[in-house]
Amino acid sequence: MRFAVYLPPQAAGGPVPVLYWLSGLTCTEENFVVKAGAQRVAAELGLALVVPDTSPRGLDLPGEAESYDFGLGAGFYVDATEKPWAAHYRMYSYVVGELPALVGAEFPIDVERAAICGHSMGGHGALTVALKNPQYYRSVSALAPICSPLHCPWGEKALAGYLGADRKRWRIYDAVALLDDFGWDGPPLLVDQGTADQFLDVQLKPQLLHAACERAGMPLTLRMQEGYDHSYFFVASFIADHLRFHASHLGLAQD
Amino acid sequence: MRFAVYLPPQAAGGPVPVLYWLSGLTCTEENFVVKAGAQRVAAELGLALVVPDTSPRGLDLPGEAESYDFGLGAGFYVDATEKPWAAHYRMYSYVVGELPALVGAEFPIDVERAAICGHSMGGHGALTVALKNPQYYRSVSALAPICSPLHCPWGEKALAGYLGADRKRWRIYDAVALLDDFGWDGPPLLVDQGTADQFLDVQLKPQLLHAACERAGMPLTLRMQEGYDHSYFFVASFIADHLRFHASHLGLAQD
Image 1 (cartoon, rainbow over the protein chains, first blue to last red):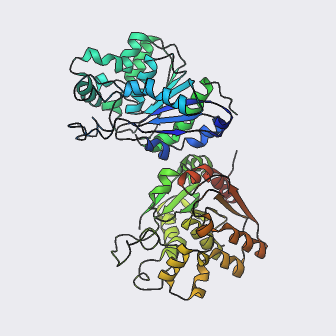
Image 2 (cartoon, rainbow over the protein chains, first blue to last red):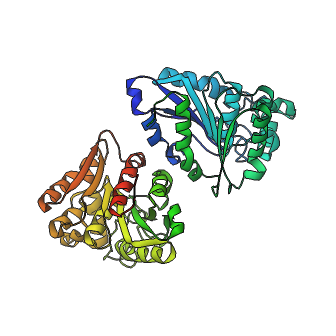
Image 3 (tube, rainbow over the protein chains, first blue to last red):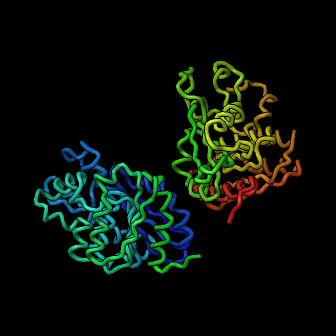
C-alpha cells in the first residue's frame, strides 16, 4: 500500500498532529498532494498530512480494472466480505488501524491528535470512518462527499460488490445511517459542496446528510458553494478552510 | 497554440491586470494551473493569470520530439531563425505580441497592466521578455530561472538549434547579456532559487545574474531557499510571494 506524507517544519521539534485525507474515485495518493495546494497552509499550521491510496494495487483480481467506480481506485473505505475482494480490499481497517500505527511509528506524528477529511468517495470515507470511531478523530470534514451510498448508484454498485446484496450490512458504511444509529458528539461536521457539481443530484445528495443531522440534533456546517464543480480546483479553493477548521479542534495556534 | 487563463472574481466588474506565467521544459499550459496553487491568491488579489504552452504542437517537424530540451515543450521563448524552426517556433513574438493582443480582445483583461514570471526555462523567458520590453511589463520575477543560456548546456543546445552557431545573435535572449547591454529601470528583480536544486550549478547559475545586476547597478532580490529542489512543490511554496510582489507593482490593493 502506498501513501503520501507531508511533514510541516514544526515536526523537526517533535510530533505534530495529523490530518488524514481520503481521496475520491480514480485517485491515487498523488492527486491531493499535487493538486490541492494544501502544504503551504499545513506548513503554517504545523499539521502533518497523510494521504492513502484509494485501493490495493497490483493484485490482478478478476474484474478489478473493468470500471472506474469499482475495484482499482475505488475501494470505498470498506472491509469487503465478498470474494475475491474480502482478502485484500480492506480499506476501512487500513485507514483506521494499520495506517495510523505505521505513520505513528515511522514519522514524528502524534496520531492521538488526528482529524480526517476527504473528497467525494473520500468524503464518504472520512464521514463514516469518523462516525464509527469518534475516539480516534477530533473533527471531520468533507468536500462534495457521497453522503449516503445506500442511496446512489456509485454506492449501490460498490457496496453490493464488496459487501453482498443484504443492504442491512451496508449501514455501517453509510454516513446517514450511522448518524441515525449512533449520532456524533464531536464538533460540527464541515461540508462544502459546489452547486455546479455534475454529481450533486444523483450521487452526492447533501440534503440526506442535512436531514440526518437534523434528526440527530447534530450541528452541520453545510456550505453550498455557488458555481463550483467536482474538480480539484474546487478542493483547492476551500482546502485552507478545512485545514484551519481541523487545526482549531486539534489545539493548534493560529494567527 | 493553447494557453490557460484564470480570471479572478473581480473581472466581473471590469478588466483586471494580468500576470503572464512562462513554464519550464516539458511543460504544457496545464502544469502551472494544476500544480502551483496560485489561483486562490490571484482571486484574493484580483489578478488574471495567463499561461501559454512552451512550444508549438502538432507540426511534426523532423526531430521536434527527439529530446526533452529542444523542440516540443522547449521553445525557449525565442524567435527561431534556423530551418525548419523559423517558420513556427516563434515563442518570443507570441508571448510579447500575439498572446497579449488575443487575451486583451477576448477576456476582461487590461493588458496595459501586466507583469511576467516563470520557472526554469520560463524564468529565462520572463527575464528576457521583460528586459527587452520594459514598456510592457511593470515587474518581472522568476523561480529557479536559467539565468544565462549562453553559459549552460540547455541554453547552448537550444540557442544553437534555433538561432545558429553565431553566439553574438544569442545575446538578445540572454538575461545577463541584456542587463549588460540595456539595464533595467523597473522595480527590483525577484528571484527564488532552491539550494537543493539538481540543476543549480550546471544549468541555472544565479551567480551570473547576481553579478550582472551588480555591474548594471540594478537591484536584485535573490532568495536562496534552503533545501528546496526544482519541482513544482518549490513553485507552490513561493508563488504567493511572487503574486503579491507583482500585485504591489500593478497597483492592486492588498490586506
